[in-house]
Image (cartoon, rainbow, N blue to C red; front, side, top):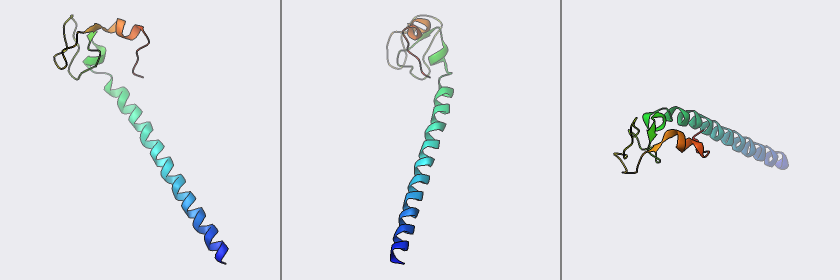
Length: 86
């Protein structure tokens, strides 16, 4: 009888650990969707973008980022060397 209680207690612990680890994976999957939605702002879609993608940056003309002061780069050149945010 004592062995049965130990086995049942171990099964409960293992089951609770499995459930907890599955919940963590679901949270990570949701974050991925939020990240791709964030990549739609002007800091990602303008002709010229800040390499740091500062919020509110990006322009149709050359210039510097108002947030960090870095020189804008052409968006096509920025993506050309395999730099993606997927």
